[in-house]
Image 1 (tube, rainbow, N blue to C red):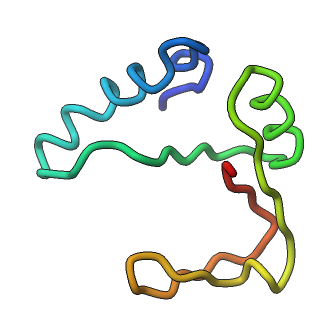
Image 2 (image 1 turned 135 degrees about the vertical axis):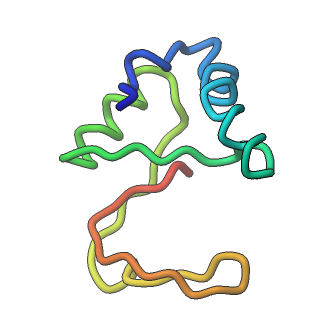
Length: 86
């Protein structure tokens, strides 16, 4: 398990996250890292904490409006609540 605190630094977060994923990306020929998912028990509290650390603002939605979305021409499903980096 990797903890956010072990990776996060306001000036080097992208570099650290990229380095963390490098071996897996090379092994499976995955493209470069463009998104990072973080699992948290309370999305509202986590978004506020991340904003206070200097990460960009988040959009948080709940309910039917986020029950599905389209990404890479495929419909994705995830019941709310959840948050996105805006």
